[in-house]
Image (tube, rainbow, N blue to C red; front, side, top):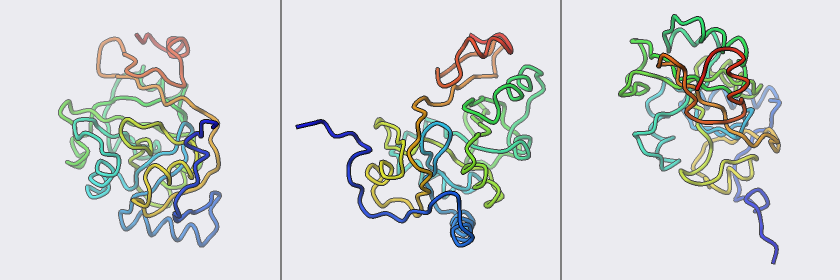
Length: 220
């Protein structure tokens, strides 16, 4: 018998919204974000899981749905307009990395803004952020007028999902909404760079290579 991949399994029934959004779908998505619902949506890497990052309820539900340790911080997806509201920085190397790789699959660990909501604060006073190149993520931020929790849409320790069907299979009916952007073809996570040390450090190898990063600034 041939081995069946996760994406080939027939998913349980789930509420799906196709992207690009119709006017009706935009209203549905806007209402979901306004009411702090949890969504799954495609990014430039894998399908993400999240919603309004300013909502403590959303953050708690994401941890619960993923069965993720509270000791592991969650990634926030944002746009440049939201960045200074959540993070602080005065290092030109950070600006250079943003200019070179944003929007795109680069996650930066930056110092948190003291005004950051309590539920997003970490013990080391940092926040992991990314300006995603996904048109879905960018539209969600615009429709919700909020940054997004954007962790991968999978159970802790399980494979990331590259389709809406795979999300539905793995997370069952725990979500209010799954946005179907089709099958994703990129199979690398974002590269994570810690910008809080003298020489920036790659914490996770991903879609952007160390060689590419070092063309912009020294990263180890």
